Image 1 (tube, protein in one colour):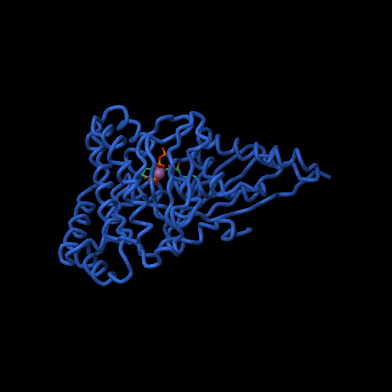
Image 2 (cartoon, rainbow, N blue to C red):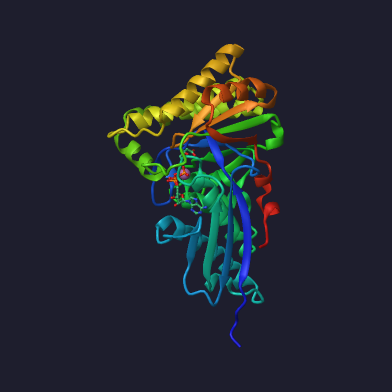
Length: 354
Ligand code: ADP
Ligand code: DP6
Ligand code: CO
């Protein structure tokens, strides 16, 4: 009788929103960045990717279904993730003959984002972190989150930071093979339990310029970008790690807002220019400025990824001042509010075996 076993495992993965942004590749093939970055992992209670990976000798080719539609997986980035994960599984199979030969079977990946895809809310981060974690679970790999971050990075740079919860750094590394360009934990979510994030959806539409393409245009044409990677980001990395370690919200806020502004200034300095923010985004910036002016100090911090949607970080004790002002200013804008994700730091504990 033919072997018809279908092996299956699943996971959820969180979104992370950078407070010191990754923007620029020094090696597009290995997906190595021009600068280090730091992010905050958002709670999976709100935004998350849910991915299941299965394999069977009856499957005839690898496939990825994203939000109900078959996705093109021929790109080098998805292929690199599949290849790296299969190589690790093959090594386990070589050392233990009793293991089923999953590494030789076709993979079927099914993934759903419960938030807008390709709209500047880090779908590629949650998406590739979930893809890598789901296959690692299927293959019963023993790799640490940091090891898996090396693989997720090759799918999408920002994905390497979604293998951890809390506050996460992606160290750019300096090796040509990328073996030191991976994520590590700056602080657990529990280190700063009152941190909150408000997500304002200015537009759920797919962005006109993907992050991958936008950052390559910036590297090729922006003069300002040189200043950003040589001076601004290295300073922001030090200041941000310090602010997180000391739970210094004012510093955290200033560096987040300055770094977001610097990144969008480099987009505007790209030739032809790239504009990710729109009028609603700029209204959100003004709302944060007036909240902070009224408080006499920074109690809210805006940041924008490569899209118009705003993420506002604030502390629980200031929620009335922050949320109240937003409901007045932005009225009907939809969004989420939630805490910093900790569950993702132990992603394999959130695994749903489906
Ligand atoms: P975003 O700002 O949402 O990260 P990007 O331009 O960086 O936008 O990346 C969007 C791309 O990421 C999508 O077009 C798709 O190729 C990929 N992606 C998004 N979600 C997933 C997922 N759940 N699984 C696999 N790939 C995904
Ligand atoms: C503005 O990780 O989506 O969100 O590596 O080409 O997939 P690729 O790009 P991606 O870029 C993210 C850019 C950013 C900043 C950040 O998340 O650090
Ligand atoms: Co992305």
